[in-house]
Image (cartoon, rainbow, N blue to C red; front, side, top):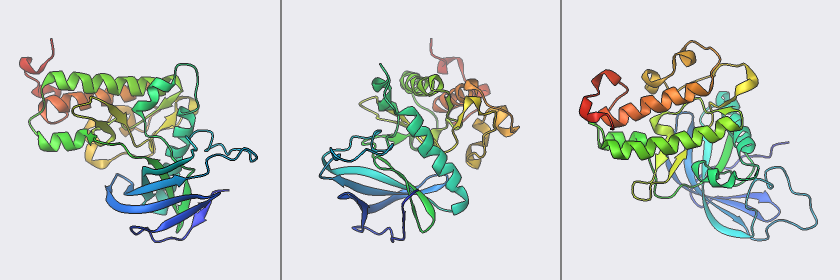
Length: 261
């Protein structure tokens, strides 16, 4: 059963997770589509016990001994969205178990630091902190007329690698949109975050929700509540790539000089 706490998430508050593991709450970072985001620090000074079976979450994570690991608490704003937050945790658990050759893809994903828990009835995911990255939403806010196509190309290629890996695991991200793609401007790293909307390709289900601010980016089958396919993610990645060139999801605004040769 999922652990439940009733802790005020204020700076320097400690959350005892058991077995000597603790989370220390930090400053609020901001808000995502469904959740509040807070910095945290994870400590597991003893590491995995040699005498105690590891939980399914401990098998996914670097269980130490570790101290001072920076993370993010992702707390649903409303309990009605707990199912989406829980879906993100389960999706990441599906993506992370190691298989031959898969480790190289993990740098494109946020990684769980601990098992999820409830706090005042709200679902909390604890994810790795991604250093030095900006969302494409932030980049577009800074450069509303678009960016150089050469920068768009490397961002788009890395996004395709991330969704391609998910597709090999049978997972459709469902919201490949500017706020969910993070890139490192100089290191050229990239992460695809916010897996709350993800579904299994074989589930024969529609995507439950989407960020209303990005309606113009959405694949038609998302709006029509039809079953998505891997092409759904590729469509939204392509619309995001267009927005990087012209400042919005409007292919008709592409000039010939905007199109990479």
